[in-house]
Image 1 (cartoon, each protein chain N blue to C red):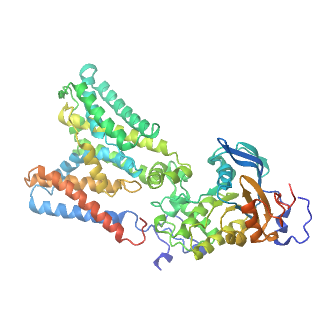
Image 2 (cartoon, each protein chain N blue to C red; image 1 turned 90 degrees about the vertical axis):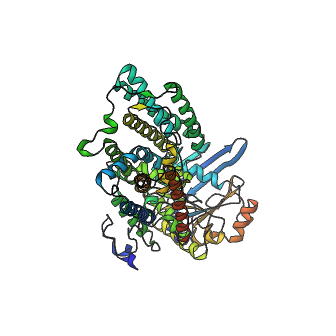
Image 3 (cartoon, rainbow over the protein chains, first blue to last red; image 1 turned 90 degrees about the horizontal axis):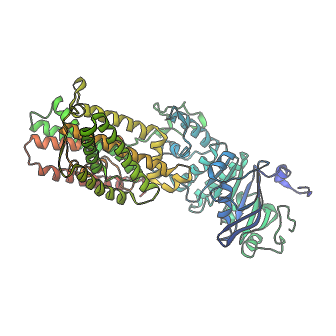
Length: 273
Length: 338
């Protein structure tokens, strides 16, 4: 953290801030398969950190560990300055960590408000407090500058793919979360809807959240990410700032695990490990 | 853009200017789905009122409600189960079993003990179904198909194949009329009201809808799917037991073949009311309409002296018609996904 950055640019203000999430030496095995080996990973408040890597690199395993649904075997998990042990999703939620899964986990037969609060409904004397939930839903969607849905009582089945993604993301931030992990949020979307969702992703970071974006699409990554972390066969091949690298270099790291221009396995400051 | 005006029925405060587009208008939740059924009901009532002088009066309506009380009480947790994509086929056998248990125990140890043991039996049956479905993870259809047969056998064994007469005064449950309203109808009303609140205004009901639509998503957001489904099965066992007690009281006897096929009447009413066998759809209101349509149909056909065998034909045809119509409606609705 003491590396002087002369031409730091826009990211300079958050340069010296400690990462909100800091993983060190993470290991995870499924039987004999060592899926994550000694992985370090950082995510910063107010920044989008892209997590990229080929299929089977361990991206999903890493986020499931962060979310607590498949806890890590060993390693250091520091969140918001405290060493924590996250063993189940509820625990992660309590810390302020939310995951938006690729398949969205929305219920088509329920409306937007119902979905936003599903599993964590606000109740008064055992009865659903619809008024409070509607108000908070409106506030949250307004805070995300969402203007494309007609009514928050629309059934989710009637929404477009982009709108569904928006609802899923809104659900992640409605509880004043600090870290949001997005698993391939644009995978099934058209061009215009992808733009819409990427704007929303940027907005989350600009609102001060730490965003971890998993994506296969480097265009998306270069458009919104401040940092890029590359997993290669279960190891963290590189953690770098988007402005320091070019797309072809990232592709090289994704496919080979190293790049001469970047220098192989590095930490977040470009130093060799 | 009528959506721009905020809905007066929305419970929240009026949206602030920047969120004016985010109204809380409920786009007519379940009403359009029920509209067709209500038309059918009105037509049926009109037809029978026209053809029979005995149909359109309060006493006959109370008859209809008494006739659907037993089915209706079971159909309430039945709706909960179907909404969460589960089903309980053992309800008819469970009702008969509880009736026989009541009669046998009451004979030896008194009425209070009989009612208590019968209710405990109902509870145990619900727990058993719930355990098999949620812990052992046998498909609900297969589990309850099995318990349907097992219970019927136990009922026959317990009653020794004979109808057990209930000597002492238990008739009140099935025949008392406080304030002129038959007690079974009052019990039905209580069960319906409780179920309506549970389905519409509690986390339990919301969870049932979520599980039925997307069980994996429900699990991901932290709903304890298995606990919710277990609870619905327990309620189903208890409701079947209550229905069995009412039946036994009405006849002053417990027949081991009572309530055969009741599970099919229950499912018919629920599906007629808009529920889907694949889960996620259905409501207490819809099930009530389904029940009343079947009740009116049976009652009217009897009053018109139609051979009772036609009732089955009419009920079955109505079910197929209603569901076919619903399929067409869904296909014609442009903005609803598969």
